[in-house]
Length: 404
Image 1 (tube, rainbow, N blue to C red):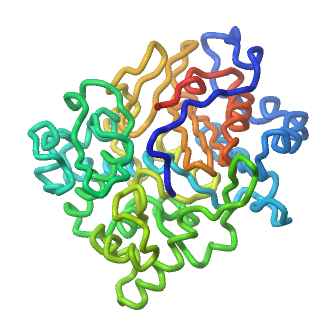
Image 2 (image 1 turned 60 degrees about the vertical axis):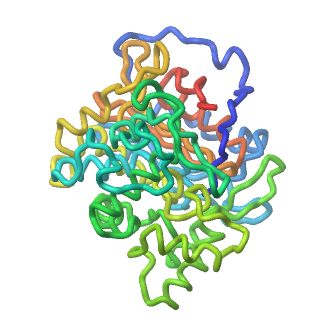
């Protein structure tokens, strides 16, 4: 699960012609897969994967609010023959955050949380620096990435202190999300995994998804690969099986665990790990493992859902897709989502980077269409960029932005 403390700014070496702006119709929206993800492009994708050093990927497309296409390419582990398909499980990395944000907004709809009330009033987080600004941070500021916190801490004694007045500007932070996770556990009285399964994952049909580990799906899990295409186990696979054993020894199911349980178990998993969010699962900011098909089902809910009780209240859904913080002339951040307005088209998006897993999703809520791509290698961003451009018919400002 471990996401780098300092996000690298990618040099998307795909060539100037590929990145050059294209002339598009102001009314252009995400198009159906036929004719967009052409047979020719799909036939050439294994070659692109070989050139980029990406052993496997999976993607899914949504059109008219329904799953339209789901495909897998390559293998789960370099040097082996176990093929990737639409049901292969990948590390979602920061694509974890929108799913958790959806859960928080469902809580708001149920009047369990006020997005503008200081989180410290729900949970007096001991990791905060002893200063007034830190104690005023709200769920809205967490989800809009404007807390001012660092992305991740690595030092045991480092306290969380905002670098600026919270809400003032964009500053990407996983630590802020983990603070919100602790508050959600306090409000609900439940372990994070149990709550997210009960309120979001199982109801939405995301039965292959977890923020921890499921023994029954481990055969479907992909390995990650570094820049030398050497296979490495995903973070969940390194911790998950041992955590399940400890849960059995303690006679307390893993979904019921709260932060203190995980912190107590961590030395039993690896004595060298520090009980900080970046090293722990479940972590709402980055430990989701899922499939392209599962994640597409979630994205459909962001487009207005299917009109049942599992949808967000329409006001909450629209607020999720409304800019709370401006980044630049094309990009802003909503509640748990990146937002792009370009070529007279509004899109929501998010990237994910856990080192050896790279992922990206983008959708057009008005057109009720979108695409999500998961890859199992450090160089995966070079491929999701091309797939999304094919699916949407153009390049995107979101491709050029990466938070350092």
